[in-house]
Image (cartoon, rainbow, N blue to C red; front, side):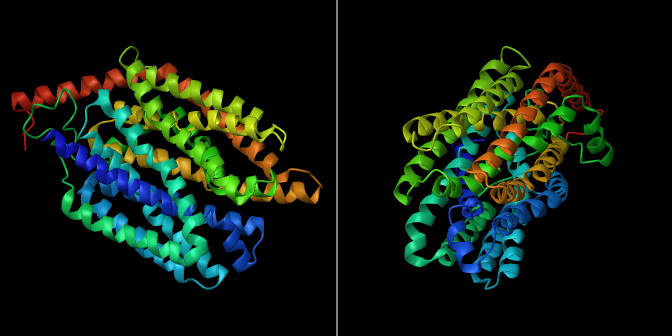
Length: 438
């Protein structure tokens, strides 16, 4: 396969993730306008974030199964089309209940990433995956920044509904690009043990193979940490814009540079974290997870310090926020790479779908929990109800995430060795003719 084409596929998927994240996270920067139009409370606003996350969580197992059974590129094109259509639905909804249904329906395509990451794993070997996944996850914070720019620059000019029309239309365009431009590959094509075989994985998806995932010792703590791990990012994307305006006294022209710098630091951290994980993985099979755990625990400490900075110390707050943001996504590419380091190619989409399903179950409650806690603290006369809710829920869950990553790091070498041995046995059987090559 031409090296240039591999990077073309990465570029297409980066655009897909960038624009999809911009659309998905656009709700946060537009929340003030949406609340004003529909006249809704903080807890009702929290439902807008929670609804889509619940829909996405419920559908993760289904998408994972479909990606392991059928052509991943075509399914990704379908997901992009669904993204466009459901976003258009959001733009035309005229009542809050209908708008809530529309925004919740956008979660249907949010479950598409396991197939994307699985396909990329067949384009690049294990030694490069952390960097590639880190580069792709740049799109998550950059998508938020793009959504922020669209909200602040286009929103006042064309209205928040037409901003959704713009992002939904881009989803339809990308559906055609993926359908006609991206090729599927045999599952396991980039594994070192299988790379020189004519067809690398004649083994098809089987339920017993998927169920065996729950017997891998590393996956259990990874699944548990996933429940807590994305709370902070979801809270940041949904509530932080509103927090800066209402409790730290930021004006509109101060919010964009502050959030922009933080988001760029998150993006830089995603790549640096993935590259660092690759570097340490070459020296220790625990490397990826040790890097992830250290970053998460340090980010927790910085978050506590940052949110306790007085509101009038904007420079200090901005610097500490940027440092905290830099560490937020270090774990992401390393967790994905670790899941693929210990699972056979034919169930990788399912494995990551289970990981994301559990993540979404936790993350789905994050916006609503923060809204409910903030309302309760406000009724009690608390001076910074939203900031306190962000600190308690975001900081507490991130600390738990770091501890479970450390547990996973202790047991991962055995599962990595078991996979490499299994793939080598599979390759030997194909060469000996015990398993047909195609």
